[in-house]
Image 1: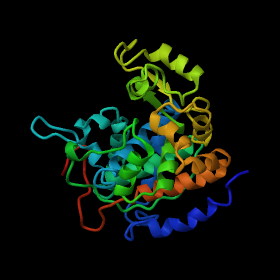
Image 2: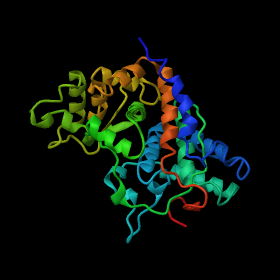
Image 3: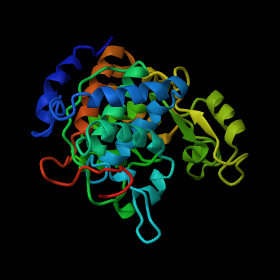
Length: 321
């Protein structure tokens, strides 16, 4: 039995969730080719490197969860001033050069018009569509922030429980359903061994692996990663989605229903009473997930945005003007 009747109605919520001054086609008159320029940059990189979808989703997530979607995650630290890039959760965020490339082309076409915050949002949308996900419209008109402080970085971690993760999501105006939907981004990308080694042996001091993880998967990951105290090699990774790791689809939810979630928070979504029905609904409804994922990304991309005369339009995404 599917929950397909639940999800299409979510699109009706899309417009009220968008900040009032953001709008689809914001650059139509000031930089008509803006979205096409970004799309071409993403298409070129995607042809050579399909991992950019996971990287851009993570960048977008880490940006929006700290003072809203203002491109603060892009600022480089200096010898005297740290930035969000110095925070531990952001040290594996990547593809900053891809945003730089899009910005350089946009500055050549229409200088001082398109924000770095909008570039992240558009690049994420385009990479999701290239990876087989929904092709959705995103409102633009964000401006870039003037603060990038590593002490403000507080994103949910891989060992969080559902209730702990939910606190992080509700703090920025997202719901439990949004959380389950956005964690579906783990349908692409990898996890570093450090993020889940605690589940492979002596889980919570038991001397045994996490009993909720498929034993065959435990064996495979143990042979890859070793233990926290005796890792086999440094900084190894494994795919989060065991079947279709480069495709934005609902396979992630099927994996966690089968005990094949890699990170603890992933597996707990399928086990917690508050989220299990959402997980099974998405596992049985591929289209429902696609529609809801697009809606949730638009909602996340509208968190505390700067508009109008607030903030700035950076000339270089890595430094304040």
